[in-house]
Image (cartoon, rainbow, N blue to C red; front, side, top):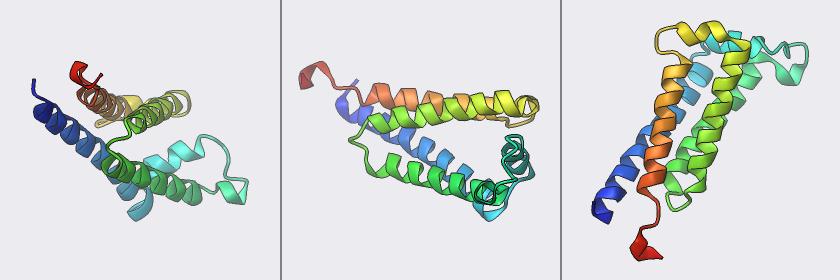
Amino acid sequence: MTDARLAQIAWLARLALALVFIWHGLAPKILWLSPDEVAMIGAHSLADYPLFATEVIARIAGVAEILLGIVLLTLRRQRWFLLVAGAVLLALLLDVALFSPHLLIQAFNPLSTNLAALTLCAVAWLAEAPSAADS
């Protein structure tokens, strides 16, 4: 496969991954606070502390996801952000499994979404790997 083709594949994987983070940060956390988001945050029993109010945590998480999506698009030479994205996806999936496992069997659930996004991380990572000619 040519380097140009690999660059296209990496770009498409990064674009799709970034859109997942941007959409999941914007829609269910900032624009329309989803009842599922409220329930997932509430499962941690942190609402007694003003800094950990559900809406505050949701907005902060939303902004962080949007920023990660933007970073994935703008800092394409930095492959390690793909590892950060993968680690975030795994941590969030583990969090859901521990605190809100009932969500794992819902339609369009965190398991299917995060596994697809993790696959995009892997595709971009592999497509951006230095070739033998680069070393």
